[in-house]
Amino acid sequence: MNLGERLFELRKAKSLTQDEVAEKLNVTRQTVSKWETNQSTPDFDKIVPISELFEIGVEELLTGKKEEKQKKEEVQEEKVITKQEAKEKSAKVVSGSIFIYILAVALIMILVPVKHVNPIVASSIFLILIGWATARIIKNYMSMPKFEKTKEEKKEEKIIKQINGIIGSICVALYFIISFTTMAWHVTWVIFIINGLICQAVKLIFMLKGDEKDE
Image (cartoon, rainbow, N blue to C red; front, side, top):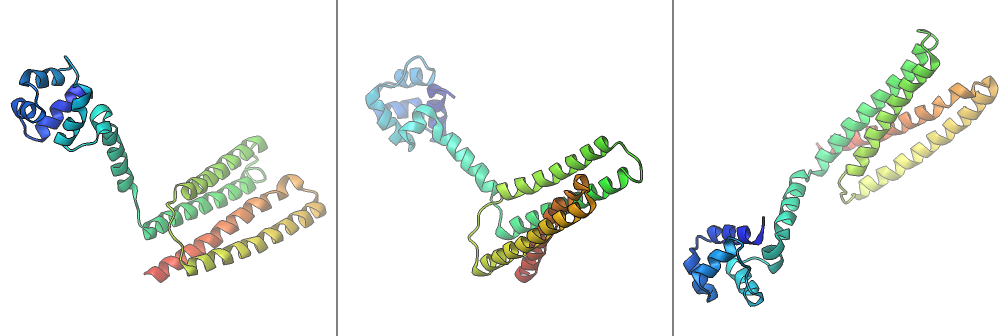
């Protein structure tokens, strides 16, 4: 929208005639008409009086930027969700991703030894599923609005980190023990996928536990 169109829309919004605008700004009606049809632009000393007349800022009058900012703010307001809704959404994403992880592990264990599918094809399917599940989780936590955490939530977060730390240590130990015992290094790395699966399950349990308390 150019300046002339903006002046026309602003005048209509105020239900003013060109004569009334001309009188308030001490110009002729023809001058106002030329402004609105882009035949001429307002003199510098008329910019502020025009802004005051239409009750808008000078920047909005000249560029219309404030209008775009307001639209963005409205869109952002529409996207605002409550803490409970955010937790429910996160729980759905995490539980769905856990299912995908389990499905991926199950497929890799069935496709090659049982169905005799080409290992490269089976590995590709496995990696695609793992990547999809991981991307879902990352996207969820990156898009999650930040809420102020309560003391109880901070305590739970600390407990989750401690539990996941213990699980991680156990999985690393199992990885090396099983790998050195069986020498199946090409398979035992799946333990780290299982580790991630268990860690997400722990988060989900605490998340659902928090939902029950809120109810």
